[in-house]
Image 1 (cartoon, rainbow, N blue to C red):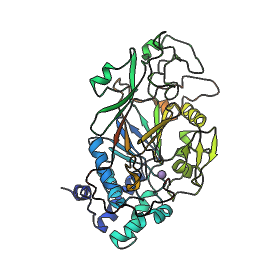
Image 2: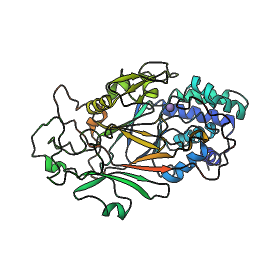
Image 3: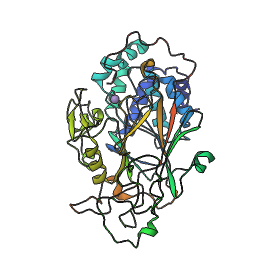
Image 4: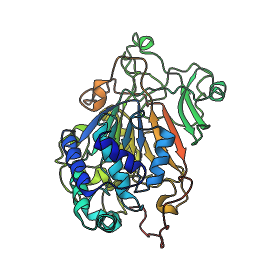
Length: 427
Ligand SMILES: [Mn+2]
């Protein structure tokens, strides 16, 4: 067994590795991360996770529910540390897995992966307490500086294979499964459907360019098929556009916080000089700090960093970049996940019973692989295919989304709960 495999074993048991090994691990991790772009490309299938915040035992529960690395591909959207009592064990385990299986696990940066924030919210103190000096904290912070700012998931399937026959039998006619919500026992708690997408061959003879998106795929009487209101994603409720390439799943952008008024394309994220402490303002700061909100346009954030952004902003960003969905973390959601703006953005939160007292459940989001073949859609990574003032075939279908909801790990051996509620827990 290699040193790395042994370190993984040890950390899985919630036992720390020696400082010298942490130093070596962080060095190797940095070498890997330095090669990654600001926006990592990730192929489906992948399981997307939100905030962990040092809740090690819940991270173990996450792996139990979602599958182990490397059997399952994971994308963690930051905030590995602070708040919980096991930031070190959680982050070092994830880092070990990254170094051991670089193509199986993607880590992007959260606003807590910062010197300034970790000094205030627990990780620094934990390092001092467990290692007796700030060395390990310093090694980890150097790794933080190299974490990617976002990821683009390509090649996700637009539909879900139903988990159970029950889901199949309750599926409306001429519709397909769009989202499923499962509990930690794998039982389907909720399903949503949308009208069946026309295949690209059906569409190839249709030369119309229709804007705004219009659903012509459902025959009269079948239009009521979706079991929830609103078209998911951008134009996802049907293909009225007529391009042979339209009925492909749009890419999914994953960031910790959200959008920035300084960033109108995925390409602009790629231009940021990210290898630094998280700045107090600017594009990099916004990506890690912003939140979606029921407003129009941009608003000031009560966090004091980043911005609030409305559904119109999300819709336009997704459209211009060939995206069907923005997946982000950063905000506590009592139900573990929350879709907003007709499914244009989703918050995924993976720290159950946050701070050992919030009483929330957690979730992870599974995106399946597009089995129809043909590889990924190049235009979906924001490179081209944008509207140049003319509405082209920019409409994309949102991926099928399977949420696995889970509760805090049983057998709470996590030590004392926080003595005092922390006032600004939303940070
Ligand atoms: Mn956050």
